[in-house]
Image 1 (cartoon, helix red, strand yellow):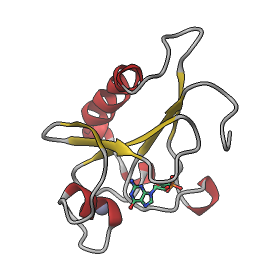
Image 2 (cartoon, protein in one colour):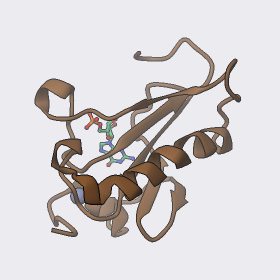
Image 3 (cartoon, rainbow, N blue to C red):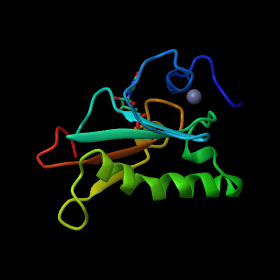
Length: 119
Ligand code: 5GP
Ligand code: ZN
């Protein structure tokens, strides 16, 4: 499935729900989290609908690698201080016990001065 009409992140990707965009290319969209935990908190999603990290396989490795490699660059762009004094946290909640609420694979990128609301 490339897009799920009931999925909130597919609606954001399709422009049906507005978001504050951080980055976009043909495969990836990044946008600010609507309820940030940290001074910088954005989400990176594949444009193709995938429920979670539990559904990916070897063929997704290049895309996941690109997303992970992009995270530090976007974190700096959004105001995180450089490593090692600054830095950022990358989180992928997976499944109910992993704390996943939106079932479209997403990478949380959080950073900025502490304390944070959570974490
Ligand atoms: P999860 O708990 O699934 O890992 O994280 C889902 C995240 O998506 C939450 O941090 C939540 O604030 C964010 N979120 C949920 N709905 C929307 C929305 O409509 N727009 C944006 N920008 N973020 C959302
Ligand atoms: Zn989706």
